[in-house]
Length: 360
Ligand code: F0G
Image 1: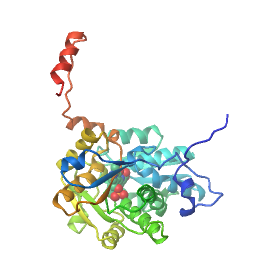
Image 2: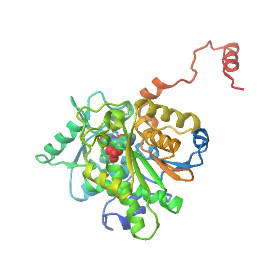
Image 3: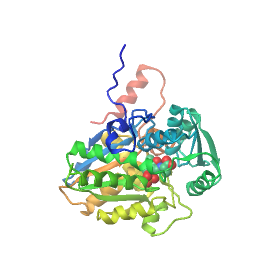
Image 4: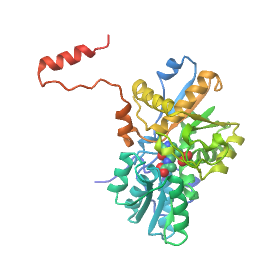
């Protein structure tokens, strides 16, 4: 039987805009091509006339946007003859590195902060056969260790300091512009290491430079309050937030992200953990979209700026939802207020549970 895949991943789709040749062996899991979903209910709840779209990156093969960068980074690592990759991670990069290394038949070493990564992400790194090195320190410490060890061991770093990562990630901006037939007015993202906001800006500028669109978005980066070096204007040594994915105090793409803010006339702001969790829940309950806490930071911040008028009515806004809600079931279950009960396995008990909870 012939095999005619409908879509074979973002390198194949954007090969003219990515550093590959006809001979490059592509390491792909069909990443990219994620839905851009227009929110129906939240704009009404905010009471403002705005178009909000969410780019649901949680629907990538390992459940986060990291797959876009990882397909490129691992493809190039293999092309260059590397037999092992390494990263520090708050969870999603390690999941993606583990999966793409498995696909390529090479080894992944992942450094993660002990006890501070969401359970789904840990299960991914373990299932894909990565060597999981838990460190008694945070992401920033892990990142420094990775940089140091890569000088002495035959391993390729696949954190976003690897330039191929951002090349892959810029394709999310391409997809958005193709669907909207222009760049949005505002693009809001959660910011941790600041690679993704920088990659999106590269993508927007590339299509604008080549005349595929003739506008550029204002880039807006949101951080968790306890982990907001861009707001403090300096590195933060002990970042803390429920959004463990962005629990980062020393962003590696510091200069790139500031350039993106300046060039796009954008801004950075911070959201409290309460705001982040409220936005995560609102998206799940009012739109049927489940993202992980860090991802909801983009919407939490956007909603605040829409309400205040900083993002004006009539705007077209894209919020990136960087990772799937299933990544962090513990946080989801902890904050859920949905009715859950245990009843006898009888018709009467089930009927009563239904009648008691019917919303008229
Ligand atoms: N959202 C999620 C779900 C993430 O996993 C990350 C980063 C970000 C946002 C921030 O993106 O770093 O490009 O600014 N996670 C990395 C990791 C650090 O190790 O998985 P950024």
